[in-house]
Length: 437
Image 1 (cartoon, rainbow, N blue to C red):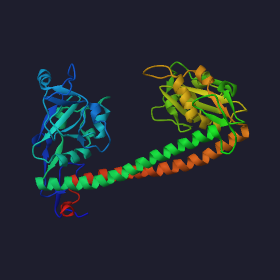
Image 2 (image 1 turned 135 degrees about the vertical axis):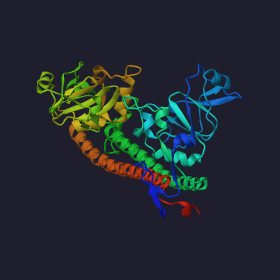
Image 3 (image 1 turned 90 degrees about the vertical axis):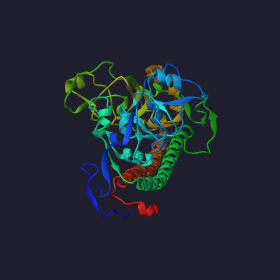
Image 4 (image 1 turned 60 degrees about the vertical axis):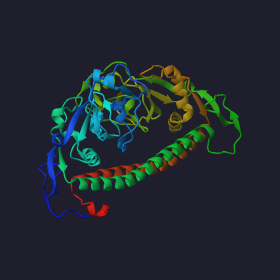
């Protein structure tokens, strides 16, 4: 891509050099700032003088959605006056100003005059094409200027620290037009890869579902399992409750252990069970050897873990990790009639996850009881067939996972290129005027 011939220092570290003809100006000198208002007592229906009323959750749309078009909540003009709210005009750029979503570059352009809650803020362009300013704000990382603390926040004083390039309107329009064209092409490729990931994941799941309930030979005689969500199973298979196929089923401690700063022993819960493995994160707590020995469980090469509180259904195989188990995970020790890897795939299948959903208790935080787990109906072939199915699924899921990883890598690469292209255009690292002409 062609570059500008003469450049100068912008005075902003992350922007670097800009074209010599461009200026850097404070955002408050080229935009009006409108802060949100409190929530109305009652949202109104479809009336002539209504205005859209946006909440932070309304910005949580698809990553590359530019405009705020749809709004479920509206408000009367009289109610706006009661709340002492300010109406943001069409083409204002709104964004959250508090919480984690603030840092996710959820900027949106209003398509009509609107009002929004007090967790949001709007910039009304006075000297900028709204699309150019929108693109610039996508690469302006507010993390540089937010108030520190456990909940990031942005006030009028913070936003005044933002500096933006000022250039002729016609050039702004050209850059916006170029980015509209290029990002739409990139977004199309991202969408194709996202659809591919979805298809591959569905096919992977279907392969697991079929193998653990129908087996590998589609020509064998079938019979009704007697369970609606399992359907037919091979004639030689049985339906057996899980407690008859395990030596022990139990959960972790129901109290908080004594933590230490560093050790080789870890306290894990259901969220540590990821894709068949126990993963330790930066916030995973350590415990002492004494604490570990005090609560040590009978875990061995036939142990399978399952998350049973909050997030339900995460599964992992024990691999000699030195761990203490929390109450949000349970352990199941398979007996000699149940192959552990076959059981692992069963736990990920539709027939078992459906049963778990039916057995859940709780409203906001779901829980799966040990008694329900013990009664889980297991479609069971002979041990030799279990091992064959497990080996088959190991190979097939590996192929699917490799294809999914490639597609996800492509998505990440495209997203990074998209962001880099926007940054290069709005900071003058590339000259797009000739390309548009």
